Length: 512
Ligand SMILES: Cc1cc2nc3c(=O)[nH]c(=O)nc-3n(C[C@H](O)[C@H](O)[C@H](O)COP(=O)(O)OP(=O)(O)OC[C@H]3O[C@@H](n4cnc5c(N)ncnc54)[C@H](O)[C@@H]3O)c2cc1C
Image 1 (cartoon, rainbow, N blue to C red):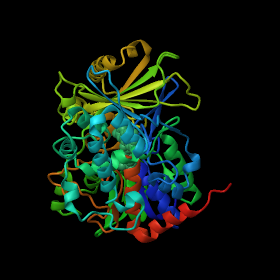
Image 2 (cartoon, rainbow, N blue to C red):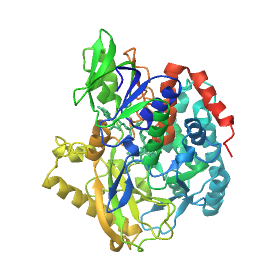
Image 3 (cartoon, helix red, strand yellow):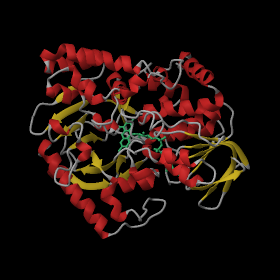
Image 4 (cartoon, rainbow, N blue to C red):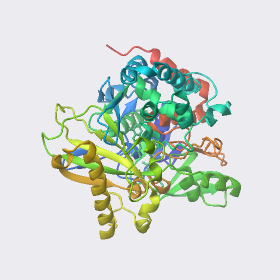
């Protein structure tokens, strides 16, 4: 470790790692401090029964040549390190409801997407085409989404005040089509009362452009970013949980880690949930009004996941995700479940290996779970780096939830139980402990059409040399967080300058 760094980054989630890469490329001395035994935050994978599972990446959009994430990753020079599998072009997301056997398809490419839906809803061509045009028009209003110069924050408040549910419902009276267009909303924890249309548009547009799975898991992205960071002289350390920020008057001079190390720096970037970052800083250095504003932003609901190891040669590999709802009425309300109705909606995704052919090896199934359900065990903490058993009652709780979830999945996939070799689970506490976020929130903070400015968190904080990055700013997801990191890094290197560099790097030809 150096005596002092230009930039100290707390947390090695995607936002922290991309910011570190950008700044190291620009000649800054950079050090990333990660509390866990693995880099990557939500990009972490884990292995059970020799099977790799993702914790927070099931598929990635915008990665075909020339598309938005492709261009960002090309600048970061990690494309050659990635091993991806393109998902089914004619139906990468399948939306299904209750006992209805029909599988409604979201296809890749706008023309294909529209034609596939028109095939299933021949009367609804006009609504489907209007929807596609609206998605594109909305995304065009976010310059960095298309690597364009322009203000990163929108001044047009109307865009933030348009409800996803209301807009989609205004397109047609066909309830089924409305549900199908809204059907992948677990992607952004869609809630009929709050979710703005732009959140829906920015999320689904990139997958309609193209959808990929990571072969052997999403940790390949963090591994590639760590390799490139080191190439540019940057440093990263695991098992370095930051427990305190140290000040000289109004500026941070260093951070202290749990193992007692002091790391000095000029600028500090926190990739940790802003609510927790402010808790670490304490009340002395910041205005109460600022702390209260951030602490009062609502966090997105958490998740309960099943990680299923399949018996060999029993369950066909599906190169697509399934979003299943108990009924169409659950589309925008699945988070408001009761004990009896849970789970009202879920997503099923399959793991893929280099040699996956017709048989699948693993399934991840994810549904909503409110943090309040795990409050009985909230005083426990359990990660690989800090093991602490949560006890028998927690195991029983998980087993009971797993059984209820499998029962629901069985209705759609009747053969599934007989294909299961082993099931593992995660709860909101797993996310809270591994990621260090508020209430195990899946995707940062709730964006609310009724109060768009409420959840706005600027990368510039009220402390001069502290910046934020990550999914609590702007948008979540691999694409959203990548753009977040570009915005954060722009605060140091300049927005126009950085975007020009990214654009320039995309003009360079790949070596043959
Ligand atoms: C269940 C689930 C499924 C998802 N599926 C997809 C998907 O299919 N496609 C997609 O694009 N996106 C998906 N996402 C979202 C995506 O994974 C995240 O938005 C993104 O990875 C978050 O990046 P981040 O930069 O905010 O960092 P985070 O992932 O939030 O990481 C923060 C890091 O900070 C570290 N940290 C915390 N406190 C400290 C401390 N005190 N000291 C040091 N380090 C600390 C943590 O250990 C962690 O490594 C999913 C998320 C979830 C939860």
